[in-house]
Image 1 (cartoon, helix red, strand yellow):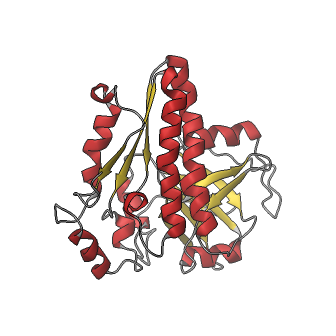
Image 2: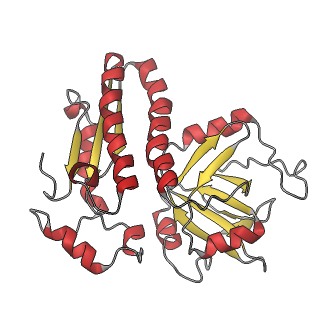
Length: 288
């Protein structure tokens, strides 16, 4: 069921947010990780949007979400003018929609069910929820602080939220997602490597802290994986991909499906006596 979190009777011309703190906490807690599509409109009213998981709840009072947009994206250019946008939280069955909005197609909304929200931002049909927002501030200080905020603070908040019901039932599995770069290092990516290394450290610390409550905390460290966003990223040319594959004992591309087995194992009862560990899934690029 999609929940609309803006009261149309209380939204003034400048789209000032009218959102109860408990509602904001509710949706932030239910979207602990996953994929969303951020949509907006250009000055002619045409819809634009892109897929991302680089967003996190930033503040409860006032309610704020942190959204990371590429400096060259058309969606960001339109958002600068309209100053309104909608975060559409996708259902697990909307993989095709996620893939569509991850491309650079000029006609992403063709054949897609959507309606215009109170602010005018597009609301995608079938999403499990959405939140209409007004632009509060644009920070153009590079990607270092953004990466640390999303990769590190996001995981920290996820562990806090997920551990509450698990402690109540005396059992649970938390699986964090880091990166092989945190183990072997990578030049030119200090901020990213540091943030992923922090996830591995948090995994170990949380495993110690939550073990008495029956919670196992582990981590998967993928190698460079051919996700839709990676395939469509112009900053990762083919020669970088080939060089990465050459470091592996199993010399082929890594696909998202390669992570499924590790995630199922760490979620299952077969891994009940494993906690605080980081499992590299990269074809043998990292061996530890």
